[in-house]
Length: 220
Figure 1 (cartoon, rainbow, N blue to C red):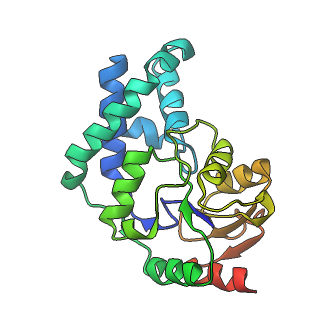
Figure 2: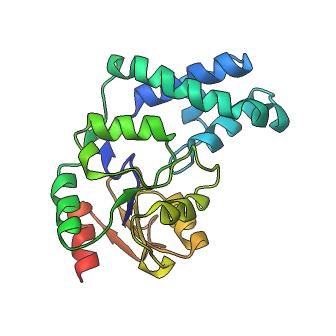
C-alpha cells in the first residue's frame, strides 16, 4: 500500500512547503517566484520537480538551465523547509490515519509513502503530523523522479519484501494519482478528502469518503 501525503494522509494547505519551494527557486535561478505561481499551475498530484519546472518556464527559464540547477534546488528547498516550517500552520493527519495504517500493518501489508513531495519535506510533514513512526525508509518521492508514475518502480525497489505490481495499491486523492497508477500498472483507490469529488476520481479501482472507507474496499 503506497500512500500519497497531501489531501490523503494529511489535510491542510502546506504553506511551509510552498514557501520552501519558492525561496529555493528564487535563490537558485534568481527569478521573482511567489507562492501564487505554484497555486496557479494546478499543483495537486504533481511532483515538486514538475511543479518547479512549470513555474520556472513561466518565468522564462529554459529547460537546460532548470536541469542544471534542480539538484541544488532540492537541497536548498529541504534546508529552507526545516527552517520555516514552524512559521506556518502544519497540515494535520487525517483523523483515521493512525487506525487505518495500524490495521493494514496488523493484516500483513507493507505500507510506504508515494508522494510528489521532496523526500526531506514529505517526511518532515508526516512526522510533524504524528505519523512518522508509521513509515520506514522505503517509498517513492518527488526527489527521486519528475514523473509521478516513475515513483512506483522506485517504491517497489525499496520495499522490504518483493512485490509484483499486481500486489501494489496506491491510495491518493487526485486524478493524477490515478493516471500515475494506470501508467505504472498498479491498482489505485482514491479518497475524496482532497480537492476532488467521486465523479472526478471515478477512474480509480474504488473511491472512498476517507481512509476508513479505503480499508473497507481493500477488505472487500
